[in-house]
Image (cartoon, rainbow, N blue to C red):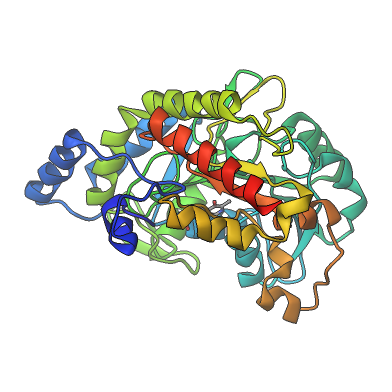
Length: 385
Ligand SMILES: *Cc1c(COP(=O)(O)O)cnc(C)c1O
């Protein structure tokens, strides 16, 4: 994603992207040190990065992998998801959450979303459960935690596994506990540059279950386990989903600033809430008892201009402001439509998907940039009506 300098070339001026990484001199030093260390593949830096994630979240085990998508893949395998199984997923997520279910021969069953946090509507989960349901995958959309107590109760009652797609939510908190340590079976993170913290590409599975951790590590490395006498045995079909030490040294360096990143994102959210004057634009809200990590700042456009979202995005771009849509419901992607999913399945998510706009949200966004975003957006909307 958008390296700021790269995107600047597109318009011949400085563009404010919807999201981007925060890299400083200490990151450069950390990566250079690894490059000179002689150890580039999975080694001491991966271990350090994993330990820092554990310490930060409180989770007992961390398995760092190449990206968030493969983190989902091995988490789903570990959950036992296989051909014929159904997995309940919110309609409002990135395709990968559902794609990895398909990759295992399973069926994503899409659940509609709440009108406040745009997270999975926990009240609509139970009606989707059948004797084929294996797992629930709540996604902490934009970094705001789902209603996990209710979801855990439902899962317990129906004997289902809970895997959180926490790709947006490193540092988010639910009732004082960090996401990654919330009594779910596993939680999956991504370290893509637009996410809270980056390793270039990268991901991790966090779990408090030692058996799961052992299997996840095995799946990360060809399904191979090493016996105490040093022999490698391939126990099951696995992959090479390892993260490198180069990437992990960047991750470990970034972890030193994770609290700062979160503080800045939270202050950006607070400022937006103060800057917006047009009451018809719906601003994101966070449920009581939770803290968002603010991966995204998803606004909902007024109904009157929703059909002109493309035009609004184009005009913003002309004025140096990048935006993105997160997300049209997964099942409305052409591939899913071909599988037989139909429009009308999740009406709340469909309405949201038509009107949502992610405006710039990242740690280094300045107050002046925020003012520009709000001013230009409100002007464009005003002009359209
Ligand atoms: C980013 C993301 C993923 C995939 O992560 P990658 O590291 O890009 O593979 C999965 N789910 C959600 C909700 C995401 O935002």
